[in-house]
Structure formats: structure tokens, C-alpha cells
Length: 307
Image (cartoon, rainbow, N blue to C red):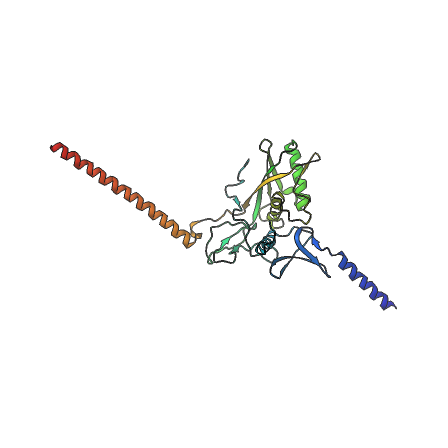
């Protein structure tokens, strides 16, 4: 009798566990959860399920792989202060199919399935010229400072102090970001421009600024990655919602980008050489034409004097 009761209780426990497993992932709209045991994953390739934690933001590298996979399948995907530092870089290349470590970090060297390779920072943003397979990327350089340059829509008049309080609260609530990382906020009410500096101590590997910025970019561009599509990044100032309409993200690394001639591909170098030779040839042609014209004028002048 006791064994029968124990079996029934065990079955009920398993059933309850299966029922408690959500079918969707709150922090990733393309995530799927099933069980038992309950587990959540993200499809990043044909039949490839990447395990994810739906109680936290999904690492940017996994998100980009999922976006590229969906794009291949034809499914849906995705200045007041200027640069914060002369070495700041912007993600001008857009998304690509990255190589990720098992913990979601980007591999330092990316090739996107081709013979063309480049080095990236911890945000997955290219920090060198593109080269070939021999390109060396010694380590993954950490992005420790991110500048968020935002423009908000016409709305309530706000003060800088209230705006900072609202933005810090929203970053913490929506992206689980430590409020102490917001170091400065600048505001130009006439241009409706907001600049938010978020940075951590150099050497800190516990905070992932790039994933927070990626989620925020998607929110502002009306492509939220959260399952709940009814909300965006909308700070509340005195009970009034402030909606954003534009965003640019600048990345500052612990080491300056190493963009030098030695990283140029052979093709680019060949183009540069051809252009230089063409310019030199053009200058030489101009020089000889002018020299010939001067010689002709002198000869003509002497002939006139003899007459």
C-alpha cells in the first residue's frame, strides 16, 4: 500500500514538473522550453539546439547565430557628444554568423564560414581590418565602456536629474543591469538627444555590457527580443512614458583597435598599389607635358627674335 502511494505521489510530482515548464522563454522570443526535465533552447542551425537560461539575458553571440539562422530560413529577424573616446568603434558591419564559445562569448577570430577573417571584441564588433585565414587574434579584447546615444520622440519636458533616475531604473528593470554602472547622462532637450555612458572597471568579466546594449538596440528599433512584445525601452518620467526613436552604440575596448596595414588582405594591398601607381603615372605625365610646353615656348621666342 505504501509503495502504491509513493508511486502515485511520484507520478503527480513528475506531472506537476512537466506542467510548470513554460512553452516560451521570457527573455528570448524564439526560445522553446520543454521537458521533463524542463530545459530551454534556441535553434541556431539545422537541428542545433543551443541551451539558454530564460531567467537571464541570452548572450549576444547566441542571439546573432539565431538571427542568421532565421534569416537563412526566410523567417523574421530583426550626435550631441559624438565618440566617448578616439578609439571608440561602431558596429558598421551588422550581424553575421559568429563562432561562439560554450558560455556564449565570441571567439576572438571570426571568419563567417569564408577565407576572410577578422578580430572582434567581446561585443562581437570588428576591431581590425579583414585578412585571410593566417590572421592572428591572440585574445578576446573586452569592451568595458559603452556609450548609448538616443533620441526620444516629442513628449514631456524633463530635467536631466529626473531623466537619469528614470533611465537607470529602466535599465535595471528591463535588462537586469547594475545601476552603479551608469556613470553619466547628458541631455540636450532641444535636439531631444540623450547620451548614456555605461562602463565597468577594466578587468571586470562579471558584467556583460554588450548583451544589454544589443537588447536595447532591438527595443528601440521596434524589434524586441523579449517574448512580451507590448513593451519597449520606455523610461517613465513623472508618470509619463518617454519613447525612443533612434539609437547609436559606441564601443570602447580595454585596448585600442589594432587597425594597421599588416592586417590588410592581399587584394586590398593590390588595389592600393594600383591606385598609387596610377597617381604617380598621372603626375609624371603632367610633368613631361608641362616641360615640353615650356621648351616649345622658349624655342618659338628665339625664332621670333631672329626675324
